[in-house]
Amino acid sequence: MYMRNRIKELREARGLKQSEVAAKLGLHLTGYNQIENAKRGLRVERLEEIAQILHCEPAMLLPVKDHDATVWVMARLEDEIWTEASFLWDAKDWYAVTAPVSDRWKTSPKYAAELHGNSMNRTYPHGTVLVWVDFDPEVDALEDGKNYVVRRTNRRGFSEYIARQYRLDESGDAWLWPDSTSPAWQQPERYTGRPDDGAIFGRIVAAIVQQ
Image 1 (cartoon, helix red, strand yellow):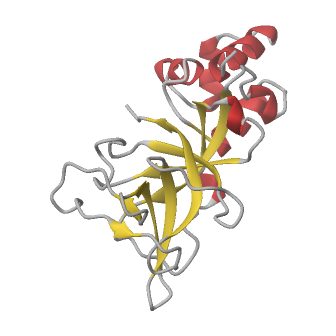
Image 2 (tube, rainbow, N blue to C red):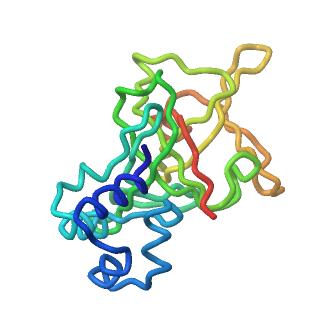
């Protein structure tokens, strides 16, 4: 059962029409229909508004189907965007997405961010939502050919948050590769685990291409 079905199920249980809920939300009927059919992402505030209208807790609108997870999109990943502060958005700008996640990651906390730019556009087009789980290089094993979320910090203390593929060469040396059609993003970076080279902190487990 997906999020759209739970909203519909609870709306019908309350005896409400789509048009009535749309009016309470200040939406055109078409816009509300997109929410019920999971064609529009849900921000935290909107989810709370729907829950209030349907007299339920927001958690009741979350999916329960096996292999699906509801994750809050809370940040943006992008090369050459350096920040001294947290890369997380204000909570009011978060929105929820439903992503298929394998049983391997079923019990792991999950996070999500929009990927902007072209550094990984062969795999993830601009605007793709990436879902990841925590990764601790001192505990977890890196997997050749898998994609990770990386934080790179410069000498001024500013950080950028990006996505890269981890690869081992024939000599066993580790590299972080972009995967891009752009000539600007064709060179890998040696992976040592040092902050300036790139510290891996998330293992990407799902991706949602935004339409």
